[in-house]
Length: 76
Image (cartoon, rainbow, N blue to C red):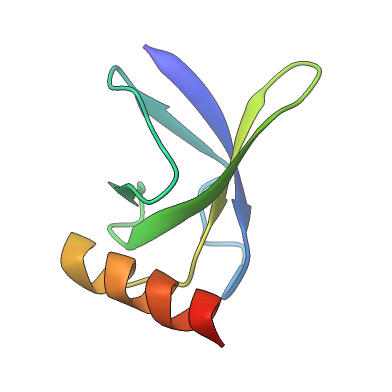
C-alpha cells in the first residue's frame, strides 16, 4: 500500500484528510475518493523529499463530476 500526501487547490479545511492510501497507480486526471467521502480529481503529482504529493481539484459527489469540475477549472 502506497501512502500519498494530499494538497488541496480548493475548499481545504480541517475535515480534509492529509493522506491517501492506495494499491493502485495514480495518474493526473484520475478521480480519487478520500476518507471524508468526497471525490477529487488529481491535477498534479509531485515527488517530495519524503512523500509523493497529490494536488487535488475541488471536491465533488462522484468521480465523473470530479473530472468535469477539474476540466472546467483548468480551462478558465
